[in-house]
Length: 56
Image (tube, rainbow, N blue to C red; front, side, top):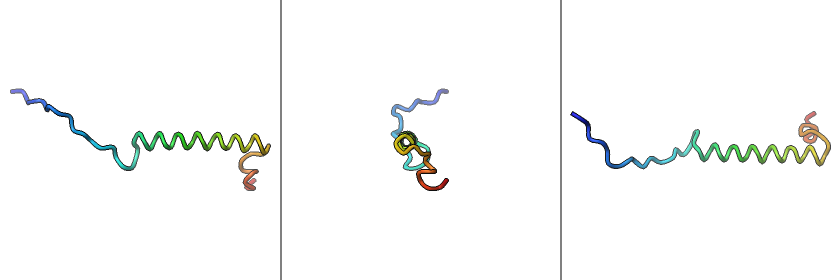
């Protein structure tokens, strides 16, 4: 005897936290912006980021 197949797929919501597509895209974009800002600081000041912050 065969099981009847569902006629509709369930509409599952994206999780609000954890590893989901939105969080991963946002994190990647923030990392790229931070990297570009770090490169700009090093280019315009002639110092590394840690030296610029006074930590070196």
